[in-house]
Length: 458
Ligand SMILES: NC(=O)c1ccc[n+]([C@@H]2O[C@H](COP(=O)([O-])OP(=O)(O)OC[C@H]3O[C@@H](n4cnc5c(N)ncnc54)[C@H](O)[C@@H]3O)[C@@H](O)[C@H]2O)c1
Ligand SMILES: N[C@H](CO)Cc1c[nH]c[nH+]1
Ligand SMILES: [Zn+2]
Image (cartoon, rainbow, N blue to C red; front, side, top):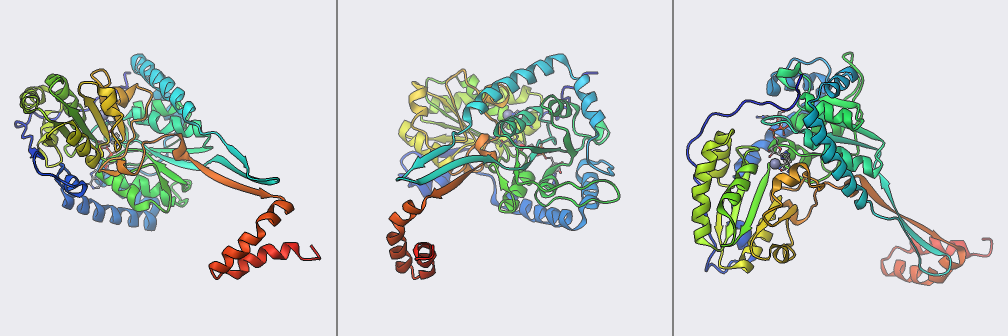
């Protein structure tokens, strides 16, 4: 049996209506640029938040019973307990298409080499005789990894989540992905096979916001089966419901970033090839009708040629309907800028999940970008390379959060614990300063805790 993802094509759609935002001559400040660049409608996000709050409440109050109701409602699956049996993982790996297995292995090998290189070093600094301060990177104990599986299924996201968690040294790893009606209520077999290939055996058939809630709060044991123990960190990509749930549980658990609905921005000048620009915009629009594809350019000629290509290519692609919907939404369009400098400012204001640079001297332009989840430089580094096989991670911040958060990496699963180890003499050397500062803050007991150590009896 072949177990590569096979989902139905969506029906052909209407033409693309790719909007234009003209920034030329407007002298916009950073706030003005942020308001002007294409974004998803606010009310869509507010609606999702209300739904997700209800889902989190249901999972916390009703545990496995709520998960079973939600699986029926959103995934059309009747479910007793969501834990995937070990035999199903082993069977999926045994039946995996050899070409897909070989591609997964190559992707794992590149991701592993990059993740191993990301591990930060521990640090010891002696600030005086006997005054030792260290920093030790320690993995979190247990993580919950989400792998999407709604409109498409994402075995590649198993790799992107699991490889850095293993490289960080996490001991307990649980993975969840939506139950699939066509596969007996289990996650897609290629997802199970990828998990088995990486040695992950705690896998749940749970999708959407309910999976994030189950990881964050745990699910108590019930007569249908054993407990799902809560985790310390939840990571992974997903649609608007998954990303909203991660934002809402942040603080109860750590998260990687809001790795929500896919975005691509392309900064291009007149040297770019319109057919490649359009192909890349379409490749990411394919994920979701709410996906964002944005072209930022100072060339009206390029913008016009890309529009022609979008109409042509979007009509002929397998998932034409959702591609056209994504390209025609308020979150997508072409941004016309005066010059490269304003283009770079617009890219930083947008803070794309993926930013492609297709300009003359692309590496020099890339070096000037401050805000992006990941940057793809030149004609031979398309986002699809990063999605599957570059070695970099494809779980990346969306909705402008790349201005302050990073893509999934080894440090997502680590804490830097600082260790303080002073001798008696080293403490005595700074005791006067501690007393002075504790007095300045009107917290004298802090100073007394130090002077107590140097009284006669001690
Ligand atoms: N930023 C990143 O790093 C990154 C990486 C890969 C994919 N993605 C994004 O992940 C998403 C994958 O989406 P998907 O839908 O294919 O899979 P998904 O697993 O994210 O979502 C499917 C689940 O959504 C829930 N759901 C569906 N409709 C709902 C509703 N009306 N109300 C509440 N819950 C509902 C269901 O529980 C279902 O199981 C896409 O948006 C894609 O762009 C992002
Ligand atoms: N482009 C997605 C990140 O937004 C990752 C992905 C996985 N498979 C295909 N694409
Ligand atoms: Zn993609």
